[in-house]
Length: 376
Ligand SMILES: *Cc1c(COP(=O)(O)O)cnc(C)c1O
Image (tube, rainbow, N blue to C red):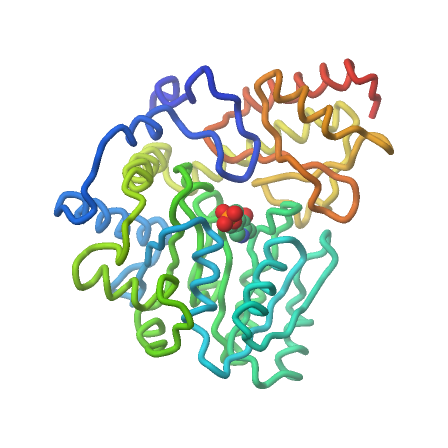
């Protein structure tokens, strides 16, 4: 694969964020067309995107799986599952150790869906034994929800072990794999997944505009009449695709064009295994450089993903805003803001980025720290 032609355009700053992220020039170029959402050629493209997503996930229609595309960012896809696939008297057990797990709790509060929260500190993975106890104590629980890679810190939750507990208790298992799907292998069967959600602008390296939800068709059909929302009704959306091949309401046409190209580039790269390896190399390059500069990681390596990494501030009273602005002036955008409880900042290494760009970032960080007079 000729990587040159897939480099981002020279004028854009590089995004070391977990999405929207740096995309290839060819993905951006794919959007320079007008597509009619009701037109058969566009519908064929949507059908092809859905088929290739199933393939990418390693599941198939023959074994009962479906994938539903939904307008909006990833949050809309997660919320659609709870808004439309939890029965009126359902109850959800949520494992959380960061902002995205907390967002699920907010959604449930907003929808007035009964729930129980299993919270672990943000540097500690969700605990299957604690889930076991929770499910024994709460027989009314119908669904278990967890974030795979909690993007707040980059921590990986043990979705296979948690899924096995959920299944042993006969619960429906929901996984937010927004920032991991496509960037690391996920075995749907081994993890006992019922619903898995991701979005167009993370490891597939497309642009933002829709989410996609994998679900067993029979399970989704059984949710008839449960939807609390019209536009976030997953079964309604599936029926739309099956009846007319279309999104129910105006689709993000340009985003789909870009996503089709992003899928081609993922396939050309060698699929999820090859992409996972590149992200791993990016991550290792970043780690080696940052350690050389004296930075310390928030997480223990045993739970650290190769998607995004949280680093402690190099010194007490470190001026993150100046650091951020100076890196931006040099063409490098890191993840702004502080989400974690302790003073950390985060660097993502997903997107159309290669180890050489992570090396450039580390050099820029070294220079900026020098300018700021900071010695980690
Ligand atoms: C990105 C992300 C989401 C979705 O966030 P949006 O702002 O709606 O794109 C949800 N969960 C996780 C773990 C994410 O990384």
